[in-house]
Image (cartoon, rainbow, N blue to C red):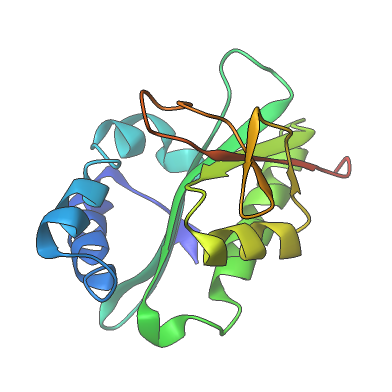
Length: 164
């Protein structure tokens, strides 16, 4: 595992488009990759992580420390090669991000996901995140309506960190 670099951008975008091809159409996978513009690695590479081996990038976490909330950090996007899912790779990425954030004085980590992404909801809960109360429920999960715009509902997570 290493700190991300701006040069990783193209490979990460390509991984999103291929790794999500099993659950989305090519157009949907491409649209998902648009959530990772290069600016994230131009401005937040120090707080983002990459797992790689001889075959290239196998997993990544794009996250940052909030500029406006001095005690918060945010995990924006995480991807793991389907061949590595279930191996603890995502857990390692999150744990490393938590440790780095705590070392920098961050006490809270936030993340969001779609209410239909039940795997992500279960993973975040298993990682110690709590679901923040929203304005409605979908399948028993509290949701923030129109969080990212009309019809773009999100589940919002919060996890408190132990001081480093």
